[in-house]
Length: 67
Image (cartoon, rainbow, N blue to C red; front, top):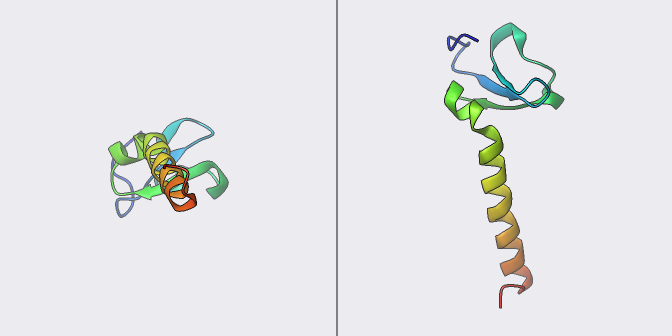
């Protein structure tokens, strides 16, 4: 896969488990992004996990479950 991309738009395909750019990007339901670099796209699932954990912790604080 080339890192050239159009306008720095890189996507992580959850179907093919790879970075996609340009004309070979799968349907929106299968991709995360856009990201500005291939490396950011490759780390998309870790980013999602970190954000979900942070949001769940915030929800617990909001609900008073962290006391």
